[in-house]
Picture 1 (spheres, helix red, strand yellow):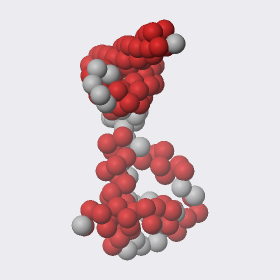
Picture 2 (cartoon, one colour):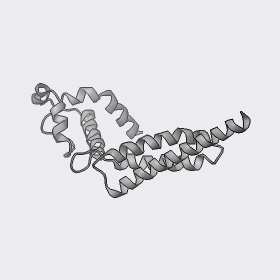
Picture 3 (cartoon, helix red, strand yellow):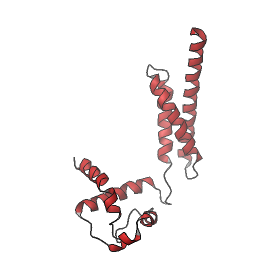
Picture 4 (cartoon, one colour):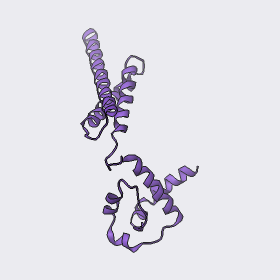
Length: 157
């Protein structure tokens, strides 16, 4: 319940605390310069004191931002690669089950995520492999679905 309240409060006060954060609070180290650069300098230099809920929101946003970026300040492609692999695997398995509608939804998602994750420069070998497998599984699922549709039309046409 506390987590839900914190999340709701962070969304409610997201705009109000960004303009009133004093410069002494250090956001996530990897992205501190980019965040502070986007805040209006006149509001930051005022140095207003934060209340308890605003401090909670700052900590919440810091942790969220720290998870999104690696040590060099670049976004993590591991998440996109993992999602591409998961969506591609689910699509490939689901195309042979009665839940083939799920496969038709997951395959394009795997294909798009695999293309995006493969095109990024800041990935490791394992994340690139995951992205390529998701791309291959998604493309294979789409090809199987297209062949099934063509066979259905050819025989029932």
